Image 1 (cartoon, rainbow, N blue to C red):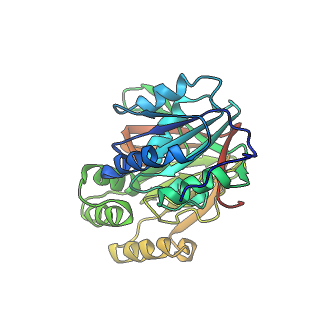
Image 2: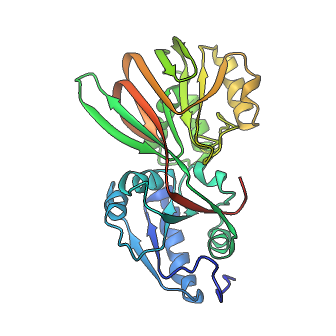
Length: 316
């Protein structure tokens, strides 16, 4: 039962549910039906807006009226990625999330489950607001010398995990952690090490790497704890770099990442940064929040401390 609100402490005047019905291989559409069936029980003004195409959430977020007090994303990390790339990160706005994607990694930082009823209860009754969340920004150079800029809310990956993201997005049968595990097993038979030159304000290192993940959140790939110490409002981004390993050790690393002890592997290097520069020995594709990006040669990464606030189930 969704409770009615009698005295909402955030004094919301209007709330917009931005729904991606295509997320989660149909979960977004099912969650949309749940919302239309249950929001009539909530004593508050609201709107529901459905995305119609890739990139549409960015367009909607960029044109968000000033009288919207809360924007609730209904989708996965890809939907959040579009919103973050459309909205002004310095706008003082409260964001909510109803996880309806495949991986839902960012939701783990907020203590949210995959149950839409639970997420609605958190949205309307939680006393916790995670203020001024961090956002990652990246300037991407490709082999042709073209430069593009993107933001990411949860993670950016280079190497093996970007290969997994590419294979995962081609798979239409398995979702969530099982889908990423399947893509990871496929990637075991078709991957290459990438020579990387990595510079941060704290250290420089280089060499062949299996992967490099730069994260705002604790997990990537639907539940792999590659950066278990990360917090979304600590004014830092965390990274995980993995040296070349055998396939057996790679499978062991998978297991340790699921069980939150990735640091037990000698091939793993963990750290954090506010600014970083990564040069790749060969052009390769990357991902931002699980969304594959064209092959690149160099990245400049910056942490942005935003004015955006997320409704959370738990204190960080």
